[in-house]
Structure formats: structure tokens, C-alpha cells
Amino acid sequence: MDHYPVSVRRACGLMKMQKSSFDYQEVPRNDGPLREALKTVAYERRRWGCETLVDVLRRDGWKDNHKRIDRIYREEGLPVKRRKKRRTAKWRGEPLERPEKVNELWEMDFMSDQLVGGRRMKLLVIIDGYSRECLAIEGDSSLTGSRVVRVLCRLAQERGLPERILTDKGPEFTGCAMDRWAFEHEVKLQFIEPGKPMQNGFVEGFNSTRRDQCLNENWFLGLADAREIIEKWRIVYNTIKPHSSLNRMTPEEFAASCPWHARDTSQQATTNPVEMNVDTTVQVKAADDRWIELRQNYNCVNKHLLHQQNRYAHARQMKRAGKCERI
Image (cartoon, rainbow, N blue to C red; front, side, top):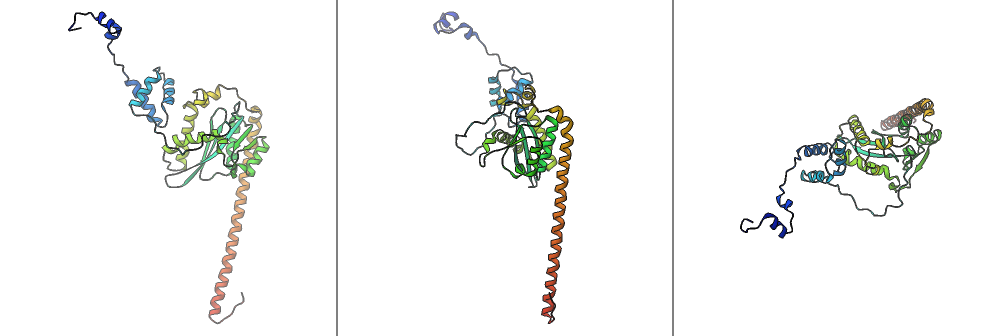
């Protein structure tokens, strides 16, 4: 147009271009506040992906389009690196049977991890199969069936009893303590088939998330430090992190939006706590007494064997000296 006597409108018409597009000048947008907010959340939750971070920013009041947030997310180099998994068969068997109400199904499983000093730590995980809430994570160097019963008693006082509990066939779940507790409180124990952990898929998926976002991201100086870090992560999982299968709600929000289906909660609140505490105390005391008895028997046998060994050694010495002593 500088070289030809043609108007801007005529030139745009010949090029089949809108005059508004020709006159448009880009106005740079200030992404600074959003960029800083996104980086802050991403640095706090290093293993959360872009979709989860968008939900968190929405809760904080940001109304920006998810595509804009994704662009900033990639510009800042925040995408989570996926850890390689071994290749498995695509066919996983029949789909999992999902419960229809809260406290219909609890799922339990064990995990293990290592402290800084090399000491092994065992973790008991209990989740609600419907709301996906993590009800408890109990950690210690050793967890027996009586300890599992103690955790279940505490949860029963807080939220009532489940209708059934799904576990594998570990000795802690198939022992007498667990069987007696389930029989007394009319809770059905359901076990998966050996070698098929995906029949307990909800808790297996939860364990994978916890391993990726908590255990692999922290160093545990001791059992007390591990319990504190894991409990904080459990609270964040239940109250802050949105869940894709719960319509992008947190497990606590989803459970609050559902009717409470605990069985006879009023009766449990008045009778069960005392009975449970008494049962647990009796079981622990009986186990302690049995352990003391076995320890005493072990010491007596050791003393007897040591006495016999000394007698034979003394007899051999007397025989070499030419004397004889009846053994």
C-alpha cells in the first residue's frame, strides 16, 4: 500500500482478509501471578499432574482457561516424569465390583518401606471402597493380627462397622484375632484368590499413588518421623487432592455428599467402645503372658543344656587325667 495507490479496505478485500485483523495489535497478557501460583502449588505437590493442579487453582479462585494453564505448565518445565512400569497383559479380568454405599466395603493391605538406617517398616492401609477415603495408615516395625484388630476397633468407634472387609490371605488377616473380631461384630471377611492382587484393585491403586507421591519423595529418619509424614499426606489425600473417579471431588467431599450408611451407629457408640477396648486388652495381655511363658521355658531349657554340657566337659577332663567319674 506504500507503493500502490490502494486503500487499506481495498487491499484487505483483495486478500480476503478482515480489516479488523489487519489493524489488530497483540496486547500481552500478564501471566505473572498465575505463573507464580502454579509454580507454588507444583513445587508443594511434585507428583501431581496438570489436571489435578487445574482443579486446585480453581478452588483457590483462578478462572483462567485450562489450556492457558497447560501452556504455562509446559513453559515452566513442570510436567511430571512418568516412572517406567513393567509391561503387563492388557486383559485384567473382570471389572471390579464397586460398592453402592459408604461402609459397605473396606479394603486392607500391607506395604513395606525402609528407614534411613536400613530398618524395615511395615504399613497397614485401610480404605473405604466407595468413597475412596483412606481411613488409616498404621506403621511399625512389626504388625500382628492383634494390632490390626486394634486399628479396626478405633475406626469402628469413629465411623461404625463395615459390612465386609476385603483382604488377601496374609497371616495377619486369617489369624484367630481377626476371625474372632469379625465373628463377634458380624463383619464378613472376604479374601481374594492367591496371585490375583487386582481383585483388591482399589487399595492396590491407592498403594501405587502413595508410593509415588509420598514414600518415594521422603526420607524417614525414624518411625515417629515416618508416621508424622504419612499422616500429613493422608490428610492431604482425603481433604485436598481431587479424585478423577469421584467427579473431581476429594474423598471427604464425596463422602459428605452421600448419605451415611453405618449400621446402628447409635448403638455402637454406647456399647461397642467398651467391649472393643476390653477385648483388645484381653488379647494383648494374653499374648504378652504367652510370650513371657515361652521365654521362661526357653531360658530353663538353655540352663539345663548348659549344665549338661559342663558335666560332660568336666568328665572328659577327668578321663584324660586318669580318673573316672560316672556321667
